[in-house]
Amino acid sequence: MWQQVLNAVSLFRIIDLIDILIIAYIAYRILMLIKETRAEQVLKGLVILLISTQLSEWLGLNTVNWLLRNAMTVGVIALLIVFQPELRRALEHIGRAGVINISLFMPSENDYSDTIEEIVKTVQSLSKDKTGALIIIAGKTGLNEIIETGIRVDGKVSSELLSNIFVPNTPLHDGAVIIKDDRVIAAGCFLPLTDRQDISKQLGTRHRAAIGVSEVSDALAIVVSEETGVISIAREGKLTRYLDSKMLRDVLVQMYAPSHETKAFNWRIWREWRERHGQNMDDDEK
Image (cartoon, rainbow, N blue to C red; front, side, top):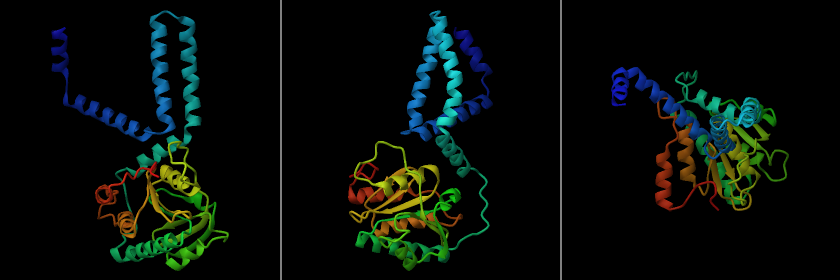
């Protein structure tokens, strides 16, 4: 036995180590991607089926083994159909993390600072008046399918324009506004709702829509509750509530940061906010 171990070690190459690390990293990313989703429970079911299939073969249960093998063959096709949204999300996630990232427009600080201030000013005003609102800041992922559900606007971002869109009892009030760079692309848009069941029952359709669009894209969703005026944001499927104007501004600066600065979401902001307020800011927060 020891001789076999020594032989295996002697034949082990650096390229083998790299190969193992790559597979381990891919497996880790897949597990993180499906964490707290429907696919997590399906993965557990597949593991149980694989173990059951192998056990039935060892025990000589031929009929059970035949049924399990055929069920798994058909199940693979069924999984591709049922979990099409999760597969799409995974591919989009891979695309956003790609090494090729060419931008034809390099914004400067002045190009986006005015836009940020207009958005913050609007959200502050809506929050004070307890006017419900849902604003989506588009990232790299295209949102044309969502934009087509609303009304094209194509106007420069301004507090006056955004505030008028969300005036209660107007045609565009209940939909979402889509912003790309410094332009309001569309208003009155319908968003996909999240399927998650662990979200607080106190959160309404706007919050579920914000989480939903952040699950299928890299967009940032800003929500103003019409019941409480609380400002929330959703990104990467996570909802954070009780933001103030400074916190919102910091988040938008990160979102609009030029590519020569960090475009990654700055989690230092979240840590400072937690330390300062001592609150749990997960999406199940009341």
